[in-house]
Length: 623
Image (cartoon, rainbow, N blue to C red):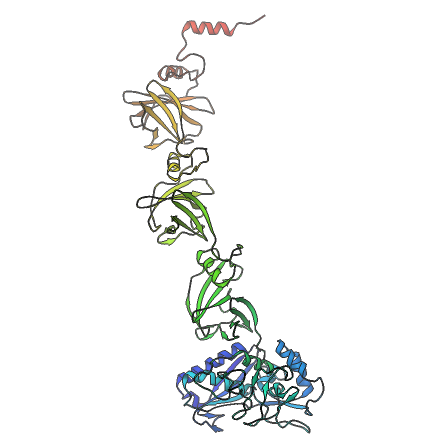
């Protein structure tokens, strides 16, 4: 509903707090009444209907100004055609399907109700009613008073007249739900009246008692609906400043649609959509608040593809969860007890984020559809007293049951933040934590250091292969076989032994040990590693006066080359170019390295006798 407040000059001169209260009440009715209609109400301050009546101390007035008279059968048909709830169905079923009821065939309907029932244009340009409030009414009670009088002006009252022979002196849709006993309606516009009550099932069930001394269309303060209802005859400091469940039933029964669509119920709170806005409903008490932002109703589509998907009561207000339609993106906000936005609980986060998974428990919803309501946790690796855990989309390093999250730049690292690289192990040391990382796409590793709060401090390595010496050394630290070679720690094998010089293959590097220790082979100051020169690798080394001589072989061509290195293993020069194993260069080097490179059975250049023998044998034939 679009409730337009037409302020008289008296109301325009009133304090702003008065108009604020009027608008707050209008916002409530706009949210609660879902019919797509425009209703205009004249608002006075100290008077009613442009001075037609002056208010008395503490008095508030309200009434419709434009009534439409409708045949009973047409009115019943309109009510039936606009049934939106069980209440509506019950009211229609309690009315006889005839041309008259209680000997009356014509009934008065306020223009606001007529718009809701389709009996006149929903946006007809008329002043539908008028309200007036005495300046003595306390500001903190004005919203409740406005709800009371605005609904009178909209039709929560008997019609003020009737037409035609046999018509009731005063009757309308309001009188269809006012009974003195089962099956017996009360038709009266008097301030005083006999005892009557509100019922939607023909008078069989009492939902509220009607007033008897001040206004017979109001509820009795001592009635079954309780002493604080805003529709009661007399207001008080404890009058509720919003509509109650029975108030909504009354408005529903007389022709308005007050039944929202429940979108989600979380605990004791239901999030509902009414027309183009949202409602927060206390499932226990039925109390409703409109979802508001900046003092106005939050409308469907107001924030683009972001809309609320759940709400829960929290403290003195509500927590609300919003989702980007069709995306794994959520945000959380708070609202006060009246549904007004107050703050953000988060920015936009993934449903797999730790915050979202923590809020799943609050809302009782599985936002990320992982099959778990609440935080998910899994052990990545345990190492001594240190366990690396993935909790939601963050990583924690627990020592004896608790510990910090891994952080970069002071913020928790989240899954996917570094692409395909993620932590795979952590170990506590004296000043913080060492962390092992792996790139799942390349299979490579890197190692970092973090302080005791999990904050990144430095790199312990670059990105390295799992077969690298760096990674294999770290295997011993983390007690993990990173490269799956069956060994936790460094692997080593003897390539060749030559006198006091041993060429060792340690992880992916080569070392030249003399009497138990020695340097790695280096090119450009950096250790040579497997695959660095394609199919070429060192096959022997020997210590010299100035350093080392090194023999290399290309496994694909079978050719050899020889280099020199200083005492630190750094390449200094070539001793030869590439040569086949039968070349004089290679055979000469066989003697140096004490190795039969060409597998001809001779280390070095064969002697003439040996050559003659080999030549003779090569021409020997068996007959």
